[in-house]
Length: 178
Image (tube, rainbow, N blue to C red; front, side, top):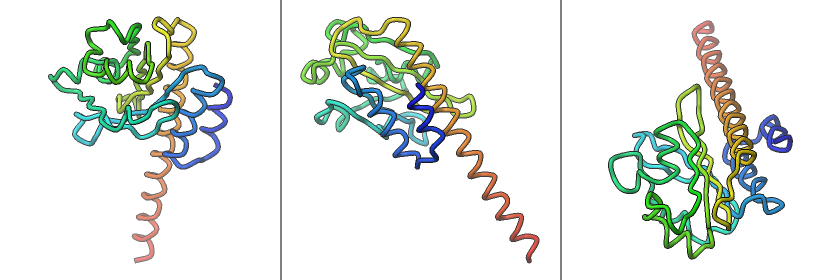
């Protein structure tokens, strides 16, 4: 958490920040894969924006939606819809994970967790991590992920507020000078 918080304060561009957070999560074999997915503008499709770890095309054909389709029943979409962390304890046997099971098996993912990302209180995406073994997400790891997701959401929200403030100041200066 300290390393990630240091990154959050470093003023990195958002894509680089998210990529580095994913890299940090797989460092020291904490998880075997991490990715961040954000909702599209319509609020229906989740698109990966950062990833790290053993993915070999896993995210290339990812189809996660927040609608009434079977692709909305997995951990990521459920975390986004409900606003709570969702644990997939066993990729091989979880019925909600069926649309992604085969690809997860090929990659060696035994379990996963999806933690919602909030921007100004609204869920806009999810932080996702995968472990090789089933039942890998105890309370300590869940608490870590939730803390990281909260910190990331606050940092991104703060940056967005600063950008909006700077744009407003620039418009105000233009009005004063005209």
